[in-house]
Image (cartoon, rainbow, N blue to C red):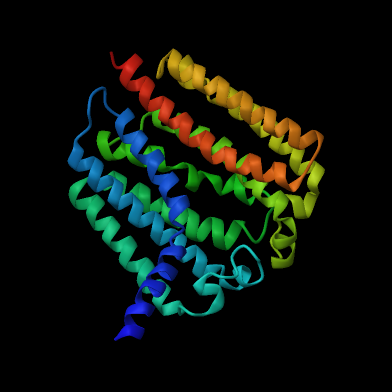
Length: 297
């Protein structure tokens, strides 16, 4: 009995790691912000709860499938070699059952308690990430994260659809922000993990085009991101509070990218990667606060 009790938490943790909980949390957070921005007042709380759970489950299912597809690649990378799929401690059938149960339950919840549009958009995002990005783009082109970034940028549109049963231009503007944010965010990681990606045989930009080329593109995308984040204010989707936050956060992002371009170090790349996560969280939080305190008044 004691051995079973001690094994169960460890096995649960292995399954949990396959769903990439930290990445899932950020995606779901952006989806929830989209839900609250979709209506002038408070959204339907039942739809918020059901939409959050459904989107979370499908995102977790997509990440688990990603780990399954990339198990051989993960085994060759230091960052991912401890995953249960890479070590073979969880079988292919078990991961497929996990992904199927999570994804199926998520789709039922979204269809039954949210709406069909959100279910199909979230399912399309699942296919975009688990199949198009992971199986087709990632192993074939150094622009994988740019082209495949659309699936990772979809959460605000999913959240908006959950409440409004539509995806207007404002929702797609939020998608565009995450779409532009994704390359510099991921390339910062790829820079200080370039040896890992080279060993795994993945054509990431630092591997195929070199460090200097990648650093330049991080800087260019950072400037583009700063410009893109101003659009919610220009189209009167947000007010001065968001604009101030977007400018301050965006200038900090460009400052990190400029330092990385001028004088590279792995530690600076790590700082930019960590800041990029904080950046997106604070930017979307500023959107929500502005919506409630400024625009919604």
